[in-house]
Image (cartoon, rainbow, N blue to C red; front, side, top):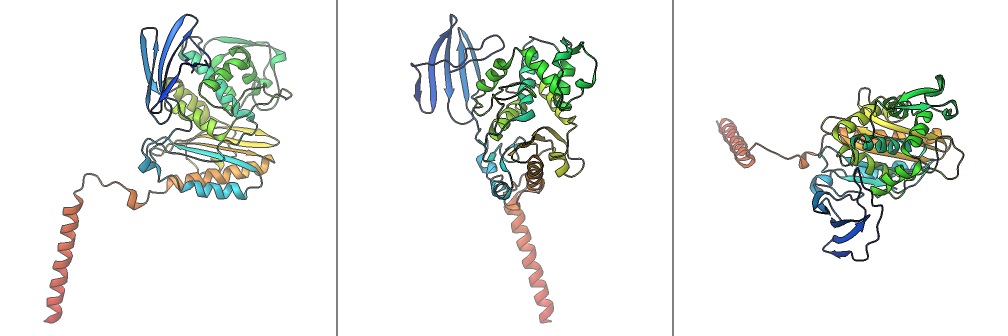
Length: 371
């Protein structure tokens, strides 16, 4: 059991008195003198409760991957799995992909091919650093206008813009966060990791969301081991929680999407889609991995995607493009006519009218033919 709020993080607490019945876990723990009573559904999208002392809180239990909110609509996304599987099977690299409907058009269904595939995270890990920073800002523990002193020894190479500036320099949290995503800035990332208190707070966020394949083990361009890892399912778990405002408030959720929309490394997902398709995304590259994840912000068909590969980077990038286009082609097509709901129309009276009108025409033409 774990309870996490702006002011308290119990960590994972072993509760030998937990009872499980009917798919619901209930129990009670005490942490630093405060009693916590919980009722947590273990499956589905159901509401759980936590009583902190005399205060009762409720919310959707975090499950990963989440089941569809509407299984009937969700079945319309399932055929896409076979298309993605064919690309993964024929790829010259190892690949995994997860996709989650965010619009409701497909009932909030999630599909995966090798969803627990666990390559090096590369720059995808920056998404968790950003969310932990934004969570603290939501909690009032920091502000975007706060400045951080960046020293010459903090500067690293690779991707980013800060490395071309003069230091020491005070840089705002806003600019550090924006550069970390927009330019995939390695210096900004390392400075923010230090600002947040090192690896532990980011890993605590990951653990609290039950993302078991993801870990922040080193800074950008630091010599491994240890290494940073993630998986398609964990990425989608994070993106879905951000979209649903389960981990960030609306203002910071929208700001995170705006940073991802400004992404300057656009050779994978955006390059595979028609010009003008809005994509908020984050890439990750090393010589032996190539990833791209994010949101297709197609009005009425918003969807979260995670394409991860391990192997030669250029071949992985091509595999990502093929997967990205396959998802787009599928969700951009109109749903099958048999699955389209008919609303606002009385179907049977209309059908009876058309049938009667057709019979009337047939009688008229036959009489004319007889004459």
